[in-house]
Image (tube, rainbow, N blue to C red; front, top):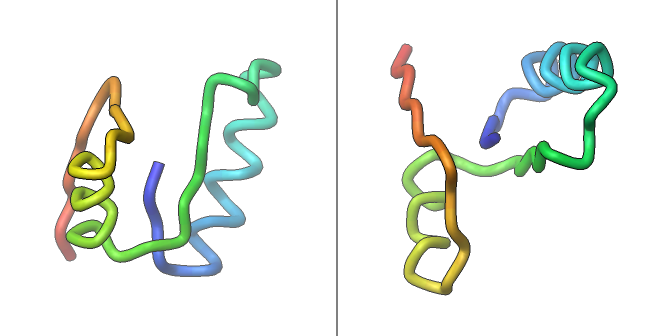
Length: 53
């Protein structure tokens, strides 16, 4: 998951804890456009969901 807003990241972290499977999640503090560039470096995503403001 990618989020750049600190408060939103805290909510995401809390929700991930509820799954009791936090090893399946990775949270990156980045802008979405920069995060998508990570695919060029070999990082793979299972799901990409963009939710613009």
